[in-house]
Image (cartoon, rainbow, N blue to C red; front, top):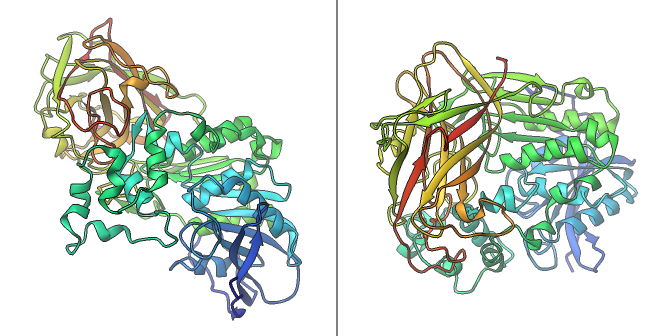
Length: 589
């Protein structure tokens, strides 16, 4: 039994420089290690930040696997409490001070429901509860909301997944290796959290360094590279490589009709969980279980990774790019829990940042009404290998050579260089100059003519790729790139497809060698203005390592291959097999 810590009285901090602000006026107190009972008898421990006076207050619940005493977490909680909220921050099951066994994501729905309803019944609560936080702390909100707790009024899941399969551990059937190992194995069944940088420090044993670990085969025993015992969740994620019941049981996207509290999602064009941000909004808007949740859904997407910033990767997006996430939270909860007219209820529901012009714009919905989905076709003289090749793009169906070919060798994969990543192994993320990878012969590069006037896109991006391989399975990777007049090649969107999942992510079907297939590759989404003088570019290859595991080209189940084979790849671009990207063209912001 943990002993409650002494209550601490703190003076509230004043938030400065925010888009929305309301002065703090309440001295606060902190009560530590409050036991919150779950329905199965397990106790989860929480700290409570609230005004020091007696009274009943709206409650914000924050549930975290990273430790409720984690450095940097306290200031936001103090700021909320100083503005009249009771804030309950809780270690999730099996983490730090909470009892029970740690099984990532799988207990959060019921535990979240129980915590919300317990908080609503406390003497310091007025019965109105919201949930707040980002990443894992955002997914737990979605999972609790899908249990329909009666006292949950609103949630704010920032940079959060809505389907752990589709927008966390897999994309297009390919396994997110760097994240799964660098996040999942580090957070092993022990109660503490090991530092993620221990695999890159100079003092780390060579066999522990990421640069060596990720090459080990088979993947299903990769956890033993750092620990002498299996890490259950890592092995579960590999074993369930298809979208099966293991994933459906914890997918909010399967249960959006049960979400009755309005949600404000918040994400970045380069965040690894961008799919969860976009799907969370669109599915809530269409399928949430109450008019308030459907009409009240809100979304902001900026030029960020896993949190707001001005500069990300190689690009400085200007002084307006950074936005105060805390201030937006306050505006949202003041509206829903305090009943204050903050203006958020009358805003258009979607606000996005357009790269290329560094400008914010509001829209009536997402995808943007009136979007023109426009095909842009690949073509070449048969030698599109690297940026020095003859690959081109055009608005008309292609003429010229029928195909391009390249060799994919899993022992020499294309390295991850920017894109949608975070939170696992330290690899370059965000908008990063692609010329390094575009110099490789195993990357097909298709570049359009110099634009004479700007072209604006905003919305989901899809690739229709006609391709063949000489084996039973392989991967295809596609990037959309904005080429600046000085040659800087800025990646905008990316996607991958494990070809055996071309028909369905629920069931694998191996390929017939050398047979042509039409493959649809989900490249998530972006918003960008291609300026006059710029060029549009598409890169096509078969690896993006270590963000994704190397497809060994053998057709064996994920994680079981102890060897790899070299694959010969063919990309077709003829009038009958017109490989093309579909761009969401919109009016300029």
